[in-house]
Image (cartoon, rainbow, N blue to C red; front, side):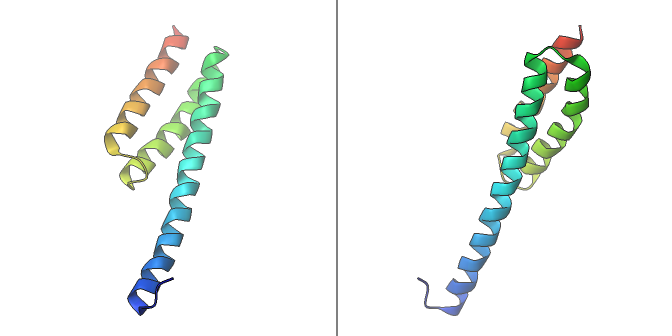
Length: 88
């Protein structure tokens, strides 16, 4: 346990940041899971509807440093391609 005031504050911040990052990552993963389920079911309408919220969550996580920006970009690209493939 931290004894110095600044260390105690930093520890409180760490706990807050970890909780926020965990929540954002969980929401992102859930959106991606739902989108992948629609893609697997070849449900084009549902996939197109779920794509935009999933992309927003992935991009936001990338911007905020929850995941790396290039990882976010790659995920968005692959999801978009998968949705476009079903529409054909």
